[in-house]
Amino acid sequence: MFTGQFYNHQVAKSTTITVLIVEAGLLLQVPGAEEGVIQPVYWLFADMQPDLVDRSFIRIIHRGADAGTLEVNDPAFVKTFLQYYKPSRITRLEQLVVRGGLKWSLGIVLVMIALLLVGNFVVLPWCAGIAAERLPHSFDRQLGEMARNSNPEPVDTAASALLTAFARQIQWDTRDTLTFVVSRRDIENAYALPGGYMVVYTGLLKKLKTPEQLAALLSHEVAHVTCRHSIRALCSNMSSMLLINLIFSGGGTLTGQLFSNAASLNSLRYSRKYEEQADLTGLATLRENHINQQGMLALMEALQQLDHQHHIPEFISTHPLTDHRVRYVQQQIAEHPATAMQHPAMATLFQQLKEASR
Image: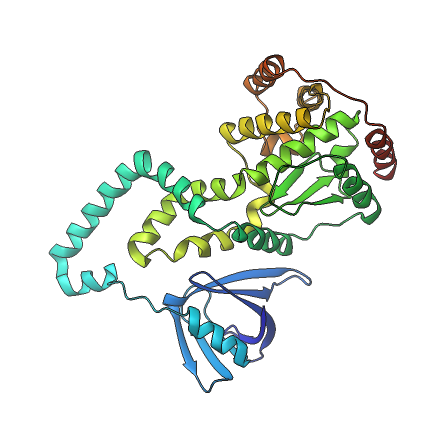
């Protein structure tokens, strides 16, 4: 990361910010209206007007929705920026409209309507999956860190250490570096961010009765990370907007739109397909670690009991728990029996974590 001076074109005073050069643009971490909150701002190269003063100093003006001026006095930044900076050479649709006149404009509108109608039902689901696959895995970590900075959680250090020790008892089949955190909030939820950052609220920990339930919960959340469900869900949710942006602005908008939506990751609602895949992968993790698979069912039953008490937990709102999922898990356990072993260390850590979460 680099440091620069940011002017938002509203006040004369500059703000010191950090800048990251990413695919197709710059990622600016700008202080938000509330103290301690960082607002991610993404600038596309295509919307920038750089002014190279010398090899050590550059001034970049952005005229888009997040208009502003960035000044960086750093030869390393200037060198790196010039290596990545690629002004758009695509003939813009708006330029064609201006040149072509009314008939061309009407034709473009009709073509766009046809594309959107066909694409909404056929192309968009396929495009969303392809877009997610083409994003480098390193992007997950960047997006996850941006989400953390956008929505800082109150961290219980002692409980987080216990949760981390509990998670270390499990062998994880993932390329991500996993981080487990307990947030002291009376919310019955847990979520995983791209790149391996997981948050479990004390409100949900209080509802768990056995270490097998907690192991099932963590296995389910790690599966969301390993399968990149957050990235895929964001691409799918944004697919209509992405198609329009690709028509007007070329391919560089994908990462920008994802960075702009990073703050919504902790409340992202997963589809039934992703939930079932996370259940299946989570069960495989339990089997490989000789943990009783019934812990997954016990977790679901505990959440269903809360739902029947007319108190819908946050976990269900973001991880839809249907009767089909319960039957699916029951079927998977029956088809893939496995020997469960005693895990005294996990049991001890679970009890300590329960006490620390009170």
